[in-house]
Length: 217
Image (spheres, one colour):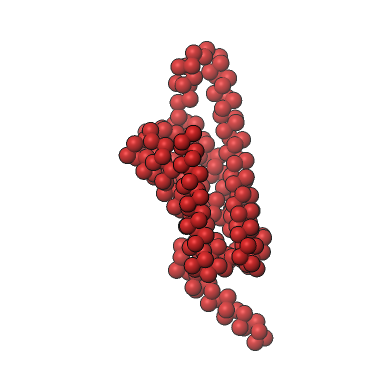
């Protein structure tokens, strides 16, 4: 009885400590009660919604016409592109969640955390849900003001020069993902604060470097 009471007090103390960070209480709860199915379903629904908004606000036929394709070829290509986009919209987030889960798991094992794999998977689905919601809101805003979401960015430094791919690397969505990455390590894997910050900085640097390399290609 005393052991259970001490354990309860310890867990409550940890929850209170984590409550100062946004999303930390939820990610802390996943440590003991990992729930991921609803998050996964919502991620897929929101991803499909993002594809739909993009498809109705982006003129794919303009580039195809400039390429000299006939109307029949343009219709076929547009249909193929739309179908492929929706399939990708379903598969991409699932693959992204799996990749994030592996990263969390590997880092947690390296740091000898006792967190369960199921807890990290639930955390990965939650992180993907939050970032997908953020991107959908941004996409909707761009669509409402009548801009092409493929060609315009309002959350990165590219707002100063839309054609500059290097500026597009420095995006608010990247900072959000880095923050969530750190909170997972802190609240779910129970890393020390400094350790979580160090891994977050490493994550952010790696993501930015990869983005800059892609922009240069």
